[in-house]
Length: 316
Image (tube, rainbow, N blue to C red; front, side):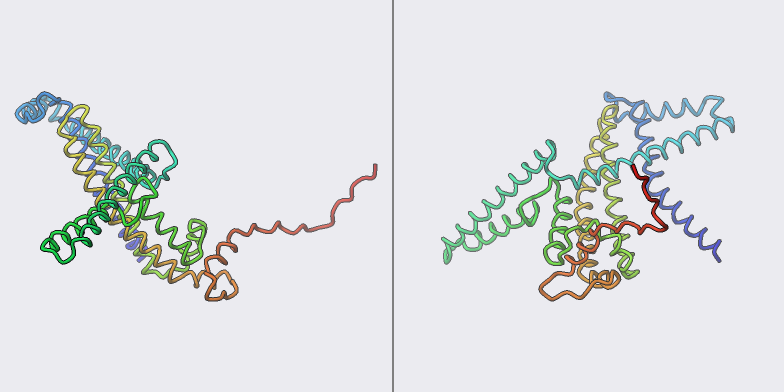
């Protein structure tokens, strides 16, 4: 029974590794080889690529079993290496999405996002004022349509003025602010490992699934960056990389919304369970329970009591 269970887990992990890393890595490796052979001047000369493959297949060594095995191993290793590189780059992408706006490049991006949001906000206010001044006229429908268009444009830039360089970072920052304001939990990172242990299994599964989905979007963005890097040898790879990056950005926004919403749900519903497990006294309705949890977790541990008889110091 245990062996079958472990075998099933190993099979699922292998399938996930093949689908998430190996197959995209083989595709990227194939594009790299094709791009190096075609070059920039003959980017779509498929006849040149076909002739090159036929020339390789016609060599006597290509029919030797040892050569075929070595070539297959080399291709698989190259694809696996590209997959590992994408996985590592995906972790970096996650960090970049959550960067604060206090560094030079991040500060420039934050200022740019704020400028765009402020412009959309001014246009929305202008449209609302114009519609209010012309109420009762023949252009009411046109004014209403303009107001809705301005609202949609501002909503695409975010529900509030940006505080982080990226929309994903803004979403997680709003989650932290909301939990601190309504639950009193000022240090979510400190309390989360303890809170995780008291969550029900279904909620933990949902959060883990949402976390995996978010990581997969970061990995997809990493593949987009790697395809953009191929433009150095084959310019059409830039089109592929741009499309992949755009898709990853849209998916990241949705994945961040789901993950942040589940984290808020966990704090709203189960901070009381954590307080009970920590044996904290009951708090009043006006005092968020998160304050007591934060104070309890930030309390330094007491030094261990000394045992045995202390050694007397020698008299001078």
